[in-house]
Image (tube, one colour):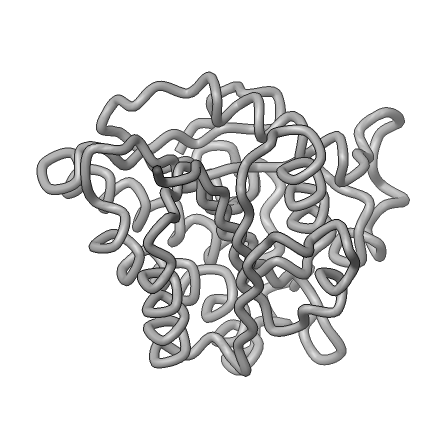
Length: 244
């Protein structure tokens, strides 16, 4: 009999690691992770988990990873978490002013935050379509809400998350006809204590800087309580809807 399985993609982020730990320690689900750096998953706790390592997230590598998934005949994927995200690195910084907008930085941000998750969705849907309910979560951000944008700035990051939201909303309309077992969720985790948020934590209100363990627990609850309704949901860490 197929085993209910959680699939975590981009599994080296702090939230992804927390999701993985809770999957094997608390949820009793089988676990598959896909990552470029599998060092965290060498510990004995993940001895029974399937770890797929990629050199990059180009589409050919994504296709090859999904072929490895197909080879696991006893796998029944019920939850997917696509955890890719880029806010800053050594040469990318969120723009505070229009004059800071840079084509190369924008391209890098939108490739990581928008293109890569959509390539996973594109190639996963044929594999996941069927009778078994499967919920796919893509990490977004509240700043990707166009109607909620009150302060501007962060041009590339905002645009990449808004684009992701639009793509997911469009995909959900299509899947409501062609893959009715799949539910798409765009998720805002709040500000999590991680390398991604570290340079910006001084402006976070008291009580609003979350541990990755807290966010993972919230997300599992949200996924469990979100209905299969043929629509995309844009939800925050409390499970509340965010305006598109």
